[in-house]
Length: 344
Image (cartoon, rainbow, N blue to C red):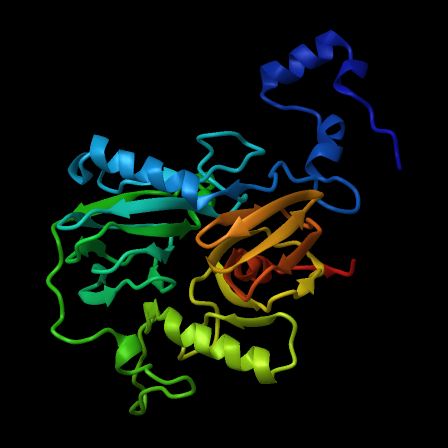
């Protein structure tokens, strides 16, 4: 490998002249911005245990009314960047949000896209562009960029969900902003997952030239996802059983930059997936097991969350039948033309 010159190799008068001109030499920084062979991530594996987070969320509910928070969320920060970092991976922000019975979170829309994985509780709902979406444990609920959304709670127990947003991209591009509005009027009908897209492989007939909505289905009920995973595990011959959440009209990822993949690991199943250029966040819907990521082992259980950096070697083992959702940035990387997998 070529030994590149350093900034200190250059005379002080030349460095001063460059600073005055507002320029800098590339070669001393080349290996930092273009390392040889593979990226050198700042991100580190993260682990957020739900039994540690839940009391903090409930205390937040006591300390801060939702009116003063707008969204009452604890941010899950990448350990490589430290507490307060608004990202769990370079392209994905995750946070744990609480809504108490009777509360509403006002409508807003923003440039980043978001999705919710429901962690706990009944009676909560999200309204997206007038469509009321019930939130049951394990459901995936979308709030795409530019779509109005608000939250409400008709139940009697706390509702908690995991937020996943492509916020870091918009912050980096200086394109992140939100607009607020009053609560939306709700349509008097069930959401599209219960009507037009009730069954996999079926979509509404379209008249010639008719256009579909860009995001035709906003809620992916967990009960149907788990049933499909169990059937796949029993008969599909794939280890592990995995299913991607897709747009039912196009078959593409549900959001432009983030992908969501449901996984089932059978009791005793061990897997070592290939190294990938896509970083990921894993949320445990149900089950118990362990994952070794970049040499660090985490013992995970129901409702826990953990992350894996780019090209991190990952080994999973399930102690009981386990169901997880993996949030990743493969759709973004494929659009940019650099998604990559490497054998172990």
